[in-house]
Length: 347
Image (tube, rainbow, N blue to C red; front, top):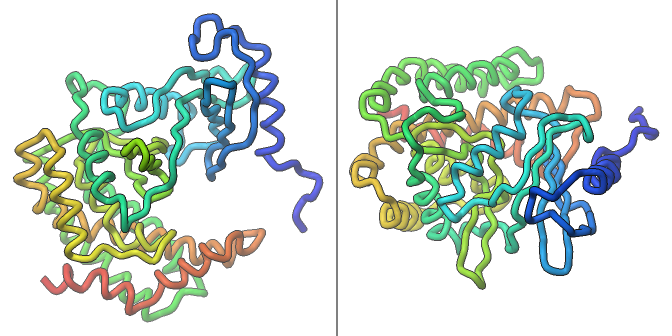
C-alpha cells in the first residue's frame, strides 16, 4: 500500500521555498532586492519542482532540483551555467540566481526568467522552432573549454545506451519473442553501423545541444512572435543533428500529440533552420549528418520505450499514467517499429 502519510514534495517544498525567500539577503540580486513575492506551484518534472514568484511587476521561476538524469551533484549549476552561455541567443530563459550549497534549503535551486506563452504546436510552430534551434546552435562559445558534457563518440554513445535499455526488455518474461528478435537484429545492425561516426569525428560541427526537444520544452508566444526552448536539464556539447533528428522523430512528435512530420513539413523545417543558421558548413552537410544520426535517435526512443513498457508493469506502484502506458504500448508494436527502421536497414 502507498504511504498516505508521506507528503507530496510539491506541497512540502512550497513552504521551504517561502522560508528560503524570506531568510536570504537579496541585496546583490537586482531582480529580487526589495521585493516581496507571492509563491505558488507552477510545474513539476520527474527531476525538478518549479514555483511561480510574482509581484505586481515581475514574474520569475524558482526551480528546485530534485535529482539528476546525468547523475551529477551539481545538476542545478550545470543547468544554470548553460543558461548563462545561451543568454546571447535570446531564445532561452535568463538565469538570475543559483545556489547549490544545500544549506538554507536542502536542494540545489535557481531563479530564472518566466516566459509567457503556450507549448509548441507542431502544426503551427515548426518554423519558429527551427529558427530557435538555429539561434541556439549558433551561440559562439570561446574555445571549447566549457562545462558541457561532450558527445565524443555520438553513435557509440547512443548504441551503448540502447544496449543497456534493451537489456531490461530482453531479460523480461513479459517480452514478446518476435519483438525481442527484431530489436536484437536492430541492435546488431547499429553495432555494425556505428563505425560511421568517424564522419562526425573527422568533420566536427560542434554546438550547445539540448537533447530533450519535445513540444513541452518550448514556450511559444504568438502575440510576440517568439519561440523559446526552456528546459536545459541535459545539454551537451555535440552535433546539432542530435536536436534536429530528435525533434523530427515520430517517437517525439507522437508522444503528446497525433502529429507526424510529412515530407512537406520536414522540408519546410529544414529550410527554416538553414535560413537562420550562421554556419555555411553546417548547411551544406546537414542532410548527411541527419541521415547518419536518424536511425540511432529512433533506436534510442524505442529502447527507452521498451524499458518503460517493462518498468510500468513491474515496478512498485503500478501504472502511473494511463496515457503514457497507451503510448508505450503503441510504440511496442512490431509493425510500427518496422516502419521506423526498414528504410534504413534495407539500405
